[in-house]
Length: 98
Image (cartoon, rainbow, N blue to C red; front, top):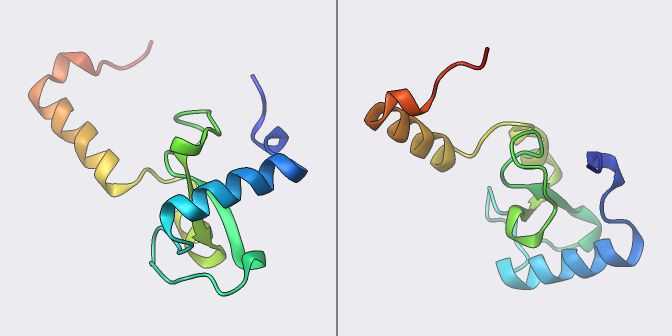
């Protein structure tokens, strides 16, 4: 498995960033501010790498640096609430690892 620092360099990174930017309207996914400068754009793993280690476009969003730093390695609120709801409905599904 690749480490987080090993993904998307050079041209591949630009192609993915441009694809995600066009898909998402060139704005920060979290604060919705439009990007005036492409240099201010960061690619963020929507579901943290530690939970779902993939760098496919479906798990990437554009974020401004302050939002990316604030989110850090946290789960998105929507994703966390779905997991909590599933755990409440079926508590036996989530058992502690030994």
